[in-house]
Length: 325
Ligand SMILES: *Cc1c(COP(=O)(O)O)cnc(C)c1O
Image (cartoon, rainbow, N blue to C red):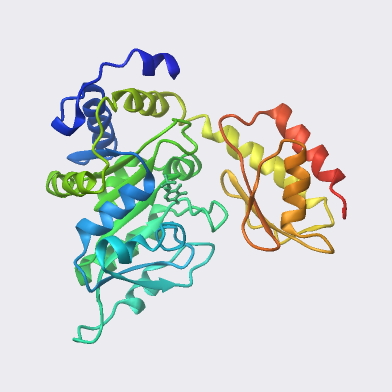
């Protein structure tokens, strides 16, 4: 990947004159059968731009209460777009067409206007849960009936697709816009893509500029993204296998409870007994193992490109030595 980056032909993407950025954007658009794509520095930016272009102030977006756009984007939907959020209590971050239909508000002067549905696949806070297209199609039908846009926060979409065997082209047909992250499981250092119609992406490009996301010589980063899409998708299966192996280790520990269903590369579990999540995280960190706190008693592990079988063994043996176990 580093060699591909160093060999990249670059230019000024503010003038759309960076051939490698153009190549990545064309590749992403083609992957989803869409007209255009936009390379951005982060997934927060692609989601925020999508919300901005889909909505007007005083609208609302509908999403699960675990959604990244609600939980982890600094309330940007309100700051950038002036919209409200209508939260659904889904199952492990997943919502249904019936729930969306019930959440849509009638048109009154005193209510925000329901305008956009955002789905997350896989869902981070849902423990890496994924949708089947058959579950998404009823949501699409509800959006069509009520004139709502449908955006996919697909930061980890390829983790879902590698499990379901479904295709990006099918996703392009169901969603108006899709965001994918190159810097998560795909292992690129920087970057996300927003994918949609030519009109949508033309507007999106203006908002990327006003957010300060227009970049020069970004082709060095785009080259990493092209490499990641070409080489790091099918190997995601390995991350999922290691996550399942890690789940087997966790299930044997008496201080671990309520391990959420492990469906992809994310494990979320609760810590019980006298110890706390922070205490366990500190003990792991002392052994060079990084994990995230997801609450006072909750921990998240993520398996990834740089996590191999030898490391898996070390993590399992270290977990057995955690005091309180
Ligand atoms: C990481 C992530 C994003 C984007 O986050 P950035 O840190 O801004 O790149 C968006 N959605 C989900 C579900 C994510 O996991």
